Image 1 (cartoon, helix red, strand yellow):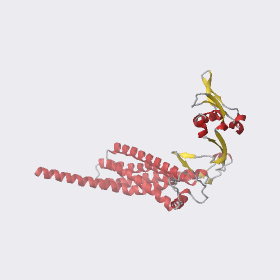
Image 2: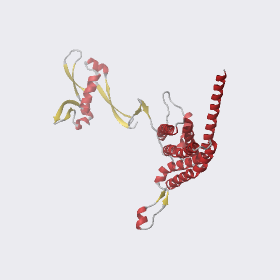
Image 3: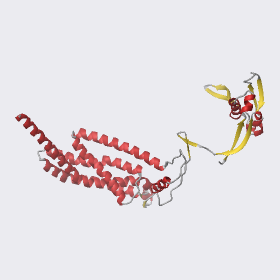
Image 4: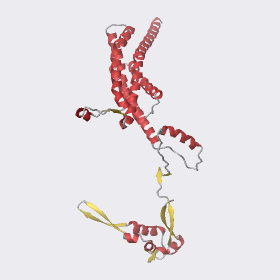
Length: 354
């Protein structure tokens, strides 16, 4: 209640006796203050409206507004009359809200605050939610957390859709390459290993889980870790085509591909370390003064650090499990298919005997 307001109170009974409606009174006041388009001025292809209203000096004068002459046709007798505004209305001075914000046609009051250093919004939100439960509310009033929390939810939904689309595209490519749903699922299982690795790394090192950048790191991992699985599965298939038994081909594939898998994963992780720790080098002074001015930290590590650490955690964990679980899952898949084939053969033999 900190904004001054002028209320025009219309005497409806008197206006009715004089044969004028509240709509006519309001239209005259609006025309005087805000203007009314009476014609248009056209210049070349442009048109400019011609507005009729009081001059600014008169509009800002309350006495002139009170003495505003309203010309109308009497609804009772049909005669043309002219009366001052003060005859049918009076002016009151009051105060009102500076502005009313609405969302979905509902009034909204926004309460916001900064978060002190050493804390994050995720630390404060659970406390606010617990306090809100005991806060007395009027009927039709509710409390909703927006701002950063709303942005996090929208980001999480977007990243989830991106992850599903990425996995779908990878799955389609794997099926076209291997012509096998089971092998494609074995390779895609590494994505789950990488997500587990990211969560474990964040919990062990007690890092903040940044929804946007950590989510982007997980989506990027979906394409990185799958490559290691393709290397192993494809090499096993090559060995089987050469005539090796399945189990021997799995052993040979694991032994032969362990080196390139570890080397490529290690190279990727080492390449992300400078980004994760925020290593900065001034290349201009490096060549001009032979002083690179190396320092760690800065604003860029706050932005890119979560992305780099999520890829490092997920890739290290997924690479370790890839070398163990992918050959094991390949063997399990082969054993299950072999058992199913034996059952089909037994059923065919029984059907032939009958």
